[in-house]
Image (cartoon, rainbow, N blue to C red; front, top):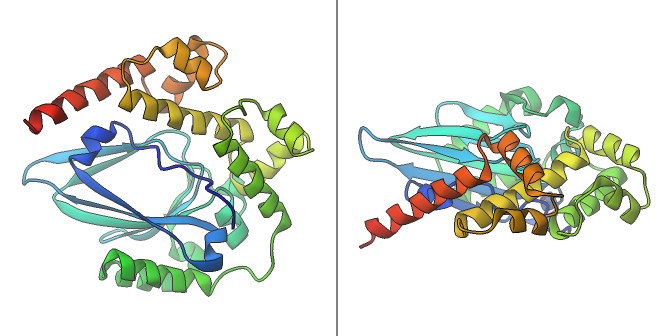
Length: 278
């Protein structure tokens, strides 16, 4: 079994989020874990008349999600943050595929999946809608068992060697913070940047450079949330940016505002959390 290909990072202003949502993660059993990274659920119960917007820097993965009203949907990897306005009481359950896992599982090329949202029935047939009703009627554990049984019946019969290679590459990119350029990845895996680009576009719909940047943005946002006073120039250097200006540009391009502003938001949320527990 491969190692992690997606971190637990990505929720913006996590101190604030923890006051409004309950995020839970569950392992995927058996051979299905070759394609699906984990199951997850989000629960919320907000006071009447209040609302909260959960903001997430997405992983380069496809998610199969189950919701009470919308049913089962497939969400491809997005190019920007995803926003989820919440009110009242609710729950979402999901299966996060590994980068490239959905393509290896279904045969749908990654180039068609980037920023794609569709009803799961368009991929898995009407049985997906029936599955959604089952998942939403059960607790998380039983829902995960139902999804596992559903997907296990549809697993590919043959091992995809190119997908196996992709998993090794993505695992290294996630775990090794010294990897900051595509040519480093190509050299380590005895290939070329152009071949890497084709592989990543085919299975993920995003290029290797985008994945390196996405993982480092996750790291940066996580560090700024826990240490909002960190020196930005030093943080940029530690995470592999050539200078603070490039770091600021990439961070703002994905998240929508510069790291200094995000750090200030996290500091404010942290102070509010301290005051709430006095």
